[in-house]
Image 1 (cartoon, one colour):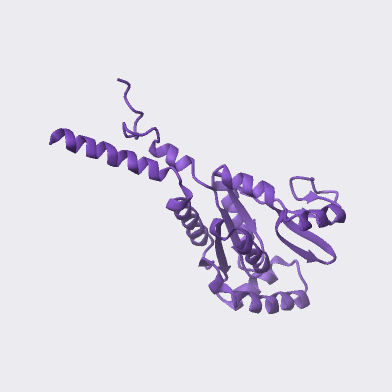
Image 2 (cartoon, rainbow, N blue to C red; image 1 turned 120 degrees about the vertical axis):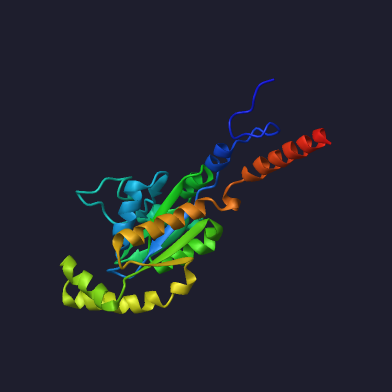
Length: 235
């Protein structure tokens, strides 16, 4: 008689490792007002976390000389974009300064079905559109700065925007923060390392939710069958 692999009950072909590996992936959404440090946390996750890839958007905006098609964006013409939108091939989309940006449905669904996790660095409206299409696959985290004074200080330290633009960003932040309750989690970025570790802990816990692991049921049933058989033999 051949012994079952380590971690595998003799009555089932599913091991604990297989049950964990054959899970359904998830969509990790990070949103925040400007100056909260969301993009920095996203970069840390992509650098340090296995099995996590950034969602690559499609856009009708012309490609810049420094950009690579398929790496920064998938560049397409407005006609193709309209076709994708009409055929429900987009999970979310938005118009920004006359150009369209969107998340294509196919690559995301394929990744999730194959147990890969996708990171989304998107705004509130994009998040709500993802809710409408694939809510059970979305894990949303709202990143907050520790205070408005610190948020303004961070925006100024970046030295990327004029005072007028900074004022507009802060005004926009008011509307964004009013929707915090619609997110699954809220992380306050008062310390970057702690905020990153909190986001990472959320990701790890969400990966272990039982509904994402269809093989957990057979694994447990195999253990129950083995235990019942063993108890029966003893009786």
